[in-house]
Image 1 (cartoon, helix red, strand yellow):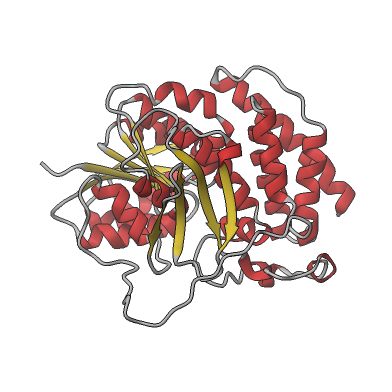
Image 2 (cartoon, rainbow, N blue to C red):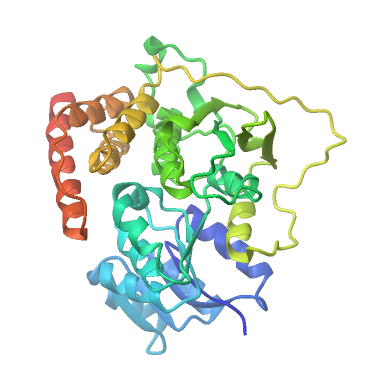
Amino acid sequence: MSPRVALLGATGSIGRQTLDVLRRHRDEFDVVALAAGRRVEELAASAREFSVARLGVARTEDRERLRALVGDGPEIVAGPEGLAALAREADIVVNAVVGFAGLPVTLAALGAGRRLALANKESFIAAAPLVERVRATPGAEVIPLDSEHCAIHQCLAGSTAPGHPDVRFLWLTASGGPFRGWSPQQLVGVTREDALRHPTWSMGPKITIDSSTLMNKGLEVLEASGLFGVDVDRIRVVVHPESIVHSLVEYVDGSVLAQLARPDMRLPIAYGLGFPARLDDRWGAMDLAERMSLSFEPPDATAFPAIGLAYAAARAGAAAPAWLSAANEVAVAAFLEGRIRWVDIVAVVATVMDQFVDGPMTEVVDVVRHDAAARERAAAAITVHS
């Protein structure tokens, strides 16, 4: 019997590329559920293509619009609880929902003992204590779809002890984004179009902006710590503009293992779907006989202070990562809407983190409260920068 797959966030960049992989393997996976945000026409088209019986929309008001497009056949659920219900009834749950809204899907999938193919780092970061608790559910496993974390997952294959004591450092690679080498003075004039022009990857707008500020790499440090049980002081970031080496693991004996491929998100997606087997697709395949160069350099902490904010949040612990992630979501949305400048994104996040107030993080309601508090302060900081 083929594994049942629920793809939540089906119309975003990761969702579309997941569908590309599934098209190649129709006989190996059974797509039982799809969900999306506002692109209901695209969702309906994918539902017809894959004959999907259960569909979900993020907003209740979109349910009837989707019903008119797909007819009476498929079941349609809505809202966070609806998406969580879809996650409980599949063998593999691809969480490609953008931002904090992906939290119910993450908790539901792991709580039901499913495989979570995770492309939603924000929910994992914001609710790390809760996620860690449900990961103990029998059958639950997390396979990261971020290219960097997927690379580390592969390079840690021979390291099985909790906390990986045989590992000296996890090295996360960063392309450097579109502004690598720019001075703080040059960055003042960055436009929306500039920031959305990533040099190597094709991604959705939120993660593309995060890549331009290097906040994406800061969030990945937090995620890697939780995913692999390694303290952030053993996680390093290095800029690698070619985006061929997706991450590295340095062992205590000096050995360094790396995963290499051309930039193509369908490779980690296929890995997450097929694990522990590998799907024979050659996404990102390389010709090693071709001449190429691989270069590495440290990130510019002065021009790109976001990574430092992430390390500080990690060391503060408890609710601080949730505040960082929420404030960044609000600031990025404001930039994309033209309400603040690019240089104001990290400034807003820094202002919010200066106002951080800790508290319990044991239940979902605690996470929601911290998320709301950080968003409120971010909204106030944005008015200052507008």
